[in-house]
Image (cartoon, rainbow, N blue to C red; front, side):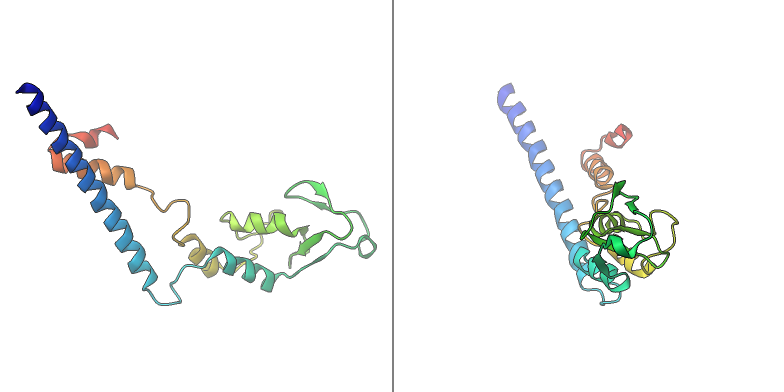
Length: 161
């Protein structure tokens, strides 16, 4: 009889955990649906759109040694620019490998790696950071789960944080 009671207790706990996680997934889904229904001005910028904006503001070109007085170096990857490589020259006259600068700008930076002059409009970067696949999408979800479980069980699980 004690084994049956313990089994039912574990089954009850697992059922509560399952429905708690299901409820949290539903909340996350509803937030994402609500975010996608907002108007286009508030809609997050995708990575592809950000790259298009970078290309529009600072078009890429091919490096030609003959056009430069001294040999240039990409200060993002610290390698010398080679003939024919794709480069991007910013308005501040700093030059980088196209791939290096694009990666820099996608990593939540909107400035020149050297002088920190703005490269992209701030609104575009903010919308890019608000995209659903951004790294901090689930920030705080652990605390929400622990709090919800503590409420359901009446325990002080929230003190584990």
